[in-house]
Amino acid sequence: MSFLRQIFRLQNKPENKILQKKLRSILPFKPQNIELYKEALTHKAKNVKDEQGNKISFERLEFLGDAIIEIVVSEYLYKELPYATEGELTVMRSKIVSRKHLNELGKSFNITDLLNVKLTPRQLGNNISGNLYEALAGAIFLDKGFDGAKKFIFKTMIDPHIDLQRLNKKISSYKSHMIEWAQKNHHEFEFFAQKDVNKGRKNYFKVNFVLNNKKISHGRSSSKKKAEEIAARRAYYIIQPDKNG
Image (cartoon, one colour):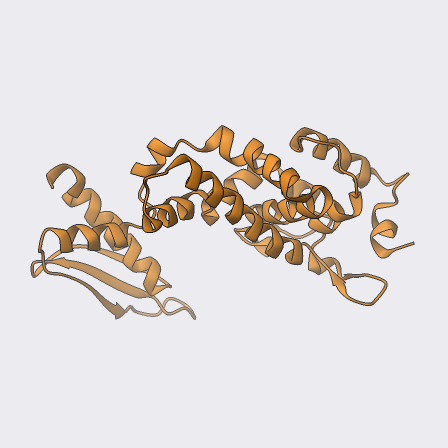
């Protein structure tokens, strides 16, 4: 008997009954190899190993699922947007497979309730729901092939949530949007960054967005990249470039 079978106890463990019931509400088919789905919901903190001594966790299936999702979404966009350029398709895909969107999908299934480890939300991290969604896609690919994974992604992600017309207007990066707008309209701009006063043990960055030698907004975060994005978002709503040209 494998370690996974010992954990879930196919006949008696309530985890297995819950898993099967939950999967029936999510998947457009009946799982064939239930062990794959258990792996997709196994956290490395559980310290489970297979018969060869390899650690079992959802992370390997997450890696596979990430690639499968990108392929399915890429094919969908290629067919639906025949006149879009490579760059436009890339931007649209990044919006659809963004970490935020994947996290929202995972949360809509309450997928973390099936994770067989007792950790606090803080210990699990902010992206656990999206990671598990990707792992589930990877498990489906191995269980049902590409067509099965594609059917799942369309059912849970594309059909109910993707509106290409609305998505095309959605801004995925305010920094990129403001840079493109400033360059197009021949404005001088700068993201001026400096280290802020330490708060505890963390280093913070303060970034000013300067347009034509005038400070428009600022952002502050422990990450310089995030501080720039905050400053750009604030500048966007102050200037409203999409309305004012």
